[in-house]
Amino acid sequence: MTENKDITGEIHCVGSNGLDDEYYMKKAIELAHKAAGFNEVPIGCVIVCNGEIIGRGYNMRNSEKNALAHAEIMAINEANEAVGDWRLEGATTYVTLEPCPMCAGAILQARISRIVIGAMNKKSGSVGTIVNLLNNDEFNHQVDITYDVCADECATLLSDFFRKLRGK
Ligand code: ZN
Image (cartoon, rainbow, N blue to C red; front, side):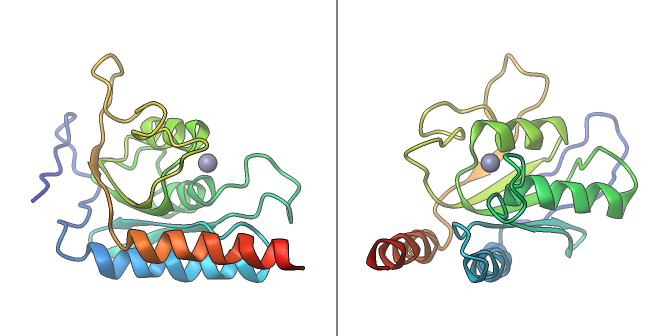
């Protein structure tokens, strides 16, 4: 069970407690499918606060011709707007693929309390595979990490996408 501590004493929102991890990961997977519909690498992300999804994102890097258009960045943008604050303390992020350094950095900057990860990312994973930016005591914020939620489904989504791409 995860405790959502807020060091400022202000509770902005409370993320999920782990019991609903699969439920929210499925929502992130739905968004990943949406990305695939745009011929984008299928990666999806949701941010949960008080049982509600306050941010949604999916990879749109090619469509938007924007190196920053990753699922997590889009979800953080939406969540920041939803709460009217850059801080997302207490919130939980669900992402189908282990974040890259940029997105792990953004999660840190947004003070997100917990992350739930589907598949691991051999090429740019920055939450344990290559580095772990979210669990380093030298930074001023650490994030609780849960791995391996719907991991097979998240990985299959990606491998199916790349197989189809090669087949064309
Ligand atoms: Zn990223």
